[in-house]
Picture 1 (tube, rainbow, N blue to C red):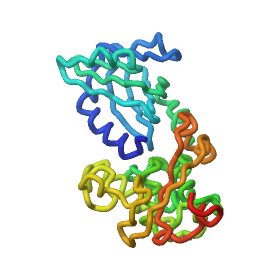
Picture 2 (picture 1 turned 120 degrees about the horizontal axis):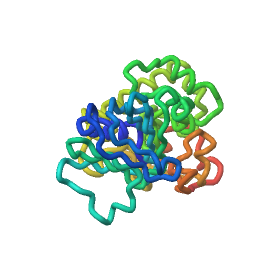
Picture 3 (picture 1 turned 60 degrees about the horizontal axis):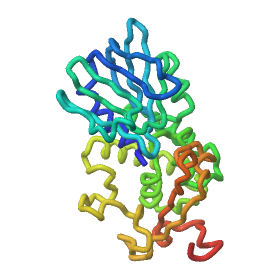
Amino acid sequence: MPEGDTVARLAQRMRPLLEGRTLVHGRLNVPAHATADLAGARVLGIATHGKHLLTRLDLAGEALTLHTHLLMDGEWALLGPGRRLPSRLVPDVRVLLVTDEQRTAAGLRMPVVELLRTADEDRATGHLGPDLLDPALDVPAAAARLLSDPARPLAAALLDQRLVAGLGNLWANELCFLTGRSPWTPVADLGEDGARRLVVRAARALRASASGVTGYQVTTGNTRPGQEHWVAGRAGQPCRRCGTRVEVVAEVPGAARAFGEDDDAATGVRRRTWWCPHCQPGPSPLDRAGRP
C-alpha cells in the first residue's frame, strides 16, 4: 500500500509536468463530479498530507483543490507530449488532466476523487494528525498525540493517521523493530522522550525515502533486492540481527478502521504484522496462543 513517502515521490514527479501550466482538458470520471470541466484551470501547486494528494487549481479566479487518495489500487500515469495511454487502461481512468503542452496525468482506478474549494481542504485532511514529512513538524506535539491513549499498542498508534500522518504497514513494522519494541507494546511504555525519539526517527526515515537519499523504503541500509527490510515480508526467515525466526500474524479485515486507517477496511485486505520476538521483547500473540 502506498505510504506517505510514496505519495511525496509521486508529487515530485507530477510537479514538473503540471505546475504552472494551464489545462486544456480536465475530466473527473466519478459520479460526484461527472459534469465538472477543469479546462482552462491553471495548476498552482501540488501538495501532500500523509497519504493524501492535493492538486491546487485556479479556475476562472476560483481556488479549487483536487483531492485524491490511492488506497490499494490507485495509480497515476504521467505522459509526455505525443504519448497516449494504452487502450486497455482507458476504462480505468478516473482523472484525466491534459496541459497546454500536451502533457497528461491520468489517475487510474482512483478510489478517492474529490473536487472542493481550496478554502475547504480541511474537509479532506482536517481529521489527520501532523504530516511526518512536514519540514515544520512539531515533534513534541506529534509525540503527545501518539501518547494520547497510553494503553494503545505501538503499531496501532503509528498507523492511526489521526495521530501522525504518513506511516503505513511497512514503516510501522520496521519502526517497531528499530525501536526494539513489540508491536503490541503499550505506547505509554515509550515515555515522552522515547515517543519524541520515535517521531524524529520516523520523520527522518520517510524524508530519506521520499528523497531517495537512502533508497526507496530501505530500512537496513542495504539496497540489494531482498535485503532492504529488517522484518517486513520476512516471515519464517532468521532475524538479521540475532537469527531468531521472524514471526507474522494477520489482522482481521476491518480492524484498521478502529485506528483511523480505513484502507484495509475498505478493501478487505488483511494487514500483516511482522516482528522478531527476541529483538522486540514485550506482549505478543505468541503469549496467548503459541505460534500463530
